[in-house]
Each structure stands twice: as C-alpha cells, then as structure tokens.
Length: 401
Image 1 (cartoon, rainbow, N blue to C red):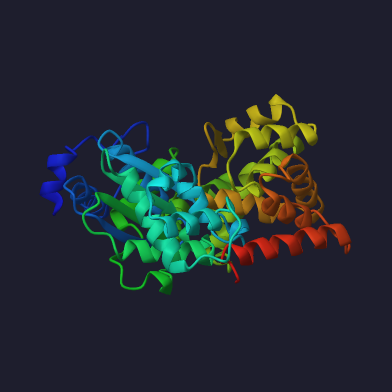
Image 2: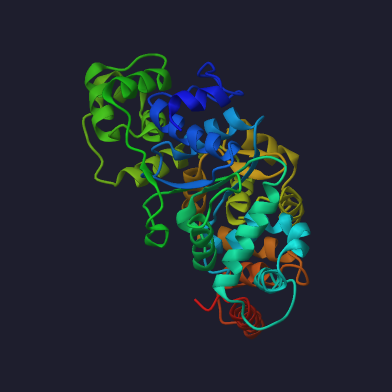
C-alpha cells in the first residue's frame, strides 16, 4: 500500500499536527510509516526498523505519525532507557506489562513463560521461543478491537532479552492488524531481515529554512553556511547549535570549528541552555534523567526526599526541558543524556539514593537494587547482596546476559 492508499485512511493535513511543530523534508518517510499503519488497519501486519544518527529527527517523525493516526488505531509507545539495558525483559515489560490482563487467554506454556519473564511467578527460566510467542499473542489480543501501532523509540537501549523477543514477534507478524516501528541510531543485527528505513539529514533548502526559524533575527550568511555544513542536515543540531553562539558569533565572528563529534556538540549546547536554571531545578532534571520509567508519582516522592519544591518543577517546565503528564518525558532523548552526563558524580549518587528510597523493595526490587548500587561509592555488603539476588532473579527470568 503506497502513499495514495495511506491518504485514504489518513487524509492530508496541514504541516501543524496536534500542536506539533511543522516537519520539514520528511514527506516520503512519513508516507511510508502511514502506509504501514494503513496496511495494519486493513488486516495486514508489518514491522519496520527506522535508523539514523542522534538528532536526525526519528523522534519527531514518530511524534507526527502517532498524532496523525491516533484517531484510527490503538497506540502503544515507549522510549527504551540505557539505564535498564541490564534488566532482563525491562523493555518488554514497559511495552506490554499492562496487557497482562489478557495473558489468561494465551496457551498455558506461553502464559507461564511471560509471567516468569515479568517476575509474576516462580519457575524455571522461560524459553525465549515461548516468550516471543507470548508477546505475539499479547499484541494480537490488544489488536482484537482495532489495529495496534507499537512504537519503540531509542530501541538501541533495549535489553537483549526484550530485543530478541520483539525481533522474534516482528518476523512472525501476519494478519493480526499490528504495525511495529522500532527506532534506533544504528540498525541492530538482532533485527536483521526486517524492512529498514534510514532517516538522513535534511536537504540544503530545508536545512537553511530550519536554521532561519531557529534564529529569527537572522544570521550572517557565512555563519549560516558554516552551521549548515557542520550540522549535515541534522535538525536537532540546526536548532540547538545556534543557541550556544554569542551575539558576536551570530553577527559574523563564528570562525572556529569545534573538533567534538556532532552528538557531543549538541549535548554541550543543551547543557549551556540549562545552565541558568537554579541548582534545585537542575537537580530535578537529573532526578528525572536517572528515573527511566517516567513514573510521575515516583518522581514526586523522590523530589520530596531531596527537598525539591514546586518552584523547581515550574522552572524545569518553563525551560522546556521536560514535560510532566501521565509520564515524565524529555523533549528529546539527548536532553536526558546531556543532563545526566553533565552532572557531578556526587549529584548522581544523591538522586539515585533518593530513587532507591522511594522504589518498592517488594514490587520492584531489581530497579531498587540498581539505584542503590549507583548511589554507593565504597564496597557495601548489603548492596552487593541485593545485586546478587537481582542477578539470580534475572537468570530465573531467562536474562542470563
């Protein structure tokens, strides 16, 4: 199903979609993703891997896709977290843990496998084959009433067990009405064989226009051309790098080229923008960056432990660094990594200690153990014992790696 058929299901709209900023230079990519969802609505499932460098616009593309199809399909979207790469099936749990109400309708071996993987029952380590089948069954049940769109952003941070299960299910999609989109920086070999779309930098005309919008006052042409060349069409770089320039540099004095990789320069620019925030607001952002589940309740409780008041939340939101809703999210994944990398080791330990204090030892012992470990500087027998128990539980769930 091509672009024309996609328009039958999703009539063309203005560039501004549901309050999302206009998306330039991505008509073909968006049409391909909409066609994938259209096929799912017609009963034909499919999956695609979307890859591209950090900041190239994968998240913006997914934002537009989900906004345009929201009225037509059920959407499940997650952002994988680097801090959970060592927690077996953490990504899978984030995606479909709330679908477990339909697990009883799965064949008994599959039900047992997924429940063991999620730590809901004790048994021998589950077969990855059965976990993959159970995942496919849960997604099929979720798509029973209307087509299902599953989106996994930052999929390069998925734990190994979750990535394998998703790849297994993706290769067996058929007529369930499921569209699966996996966005990552580089295509992971575990997803080999799946359709693959590379998102590249914007063309020169679109890059210049995006840069013009990012610097309303205008740029010296030499500065503009140098920024366009250095950004290589990367939309986030085009928006963020000018913000780190002084008025003199914008006026024509930008002559030195940084030797830092583009991703590092973008993060550096983001850190500069957040520097004027109060120490409390920056600590709150660090707290959110260290808490991968995006649970607002957990963030509120941990912020109370650290003595962070409402004014810290207001300042962080005014800076447009993150948004607090049903989940806590950053405006771009690089904001999260920039905030975390720029923090001092002492502040990182403080926020992990606060998160460990408010994470349930009964319901989420593994994440609590990892927060405690990240908060600990010297060898600690109790923390080591918690990590050892976590490793045993991971092995039981099939997460030997």
